[in-house]
Amino acid sequence: KIKVFQGGYDKNLCYLLWCEESLRAAIIDPSVEPLEIFEYIENNDLFLEKILITHTHHDHIAFLDDFIFKFPNLKVFGYKESVKKNINNYIGITNREIINVGKNILTAIYTPGHYPDSICYWNIDNKCIFTGDTMFVGRTGRTISSGSSIEELFNSIYFKLLKLSNSTRIYPGHNYGFSKSCTIQENIQYSP
Image (tube, rainbow, N blue to C red):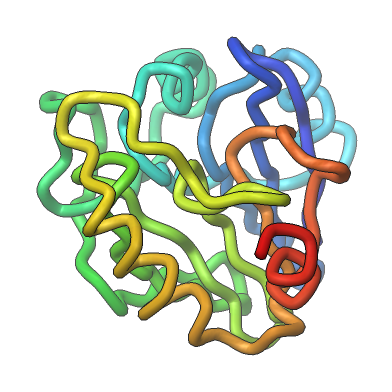
């Protein structure tokens, strides 16, 4: 299951994922004020055990400390060479590494370009990918900061993300498009 929360600094999207059988849950990008998320977790008897970071730009980890304070045993996953150092409970992962959320499996796909530690999380069974700022609905990510690389972003988009099934649903880090999510096929159609 996926529950989407919007807020943060610039229409940020934060995702709560969970396994319906075990009720084990994870957050992708703690970028939204968390009180509503905490209530949702409690009201649905979920066990939050992981946070997955798509990249360490401040807006995507703005509320990380709040989540760790509320759930001190959380494990925080992100790219092994994180730009931001000294994140509590941090576990560095590499390209194609597997992370489970209950019985659901997510595969990390290293996608530099927007930022050097950008990583996407792909679930092949449910045909979805959490792209952070590498790909949005209606367009690709941007190269706007120190460490951005248009060449790396091109390679991440064309040689990694667009190689996935066209029916894969994109869940981006911001609500910048005509909807909060779309399929890869729809994105190709709407952003030639």
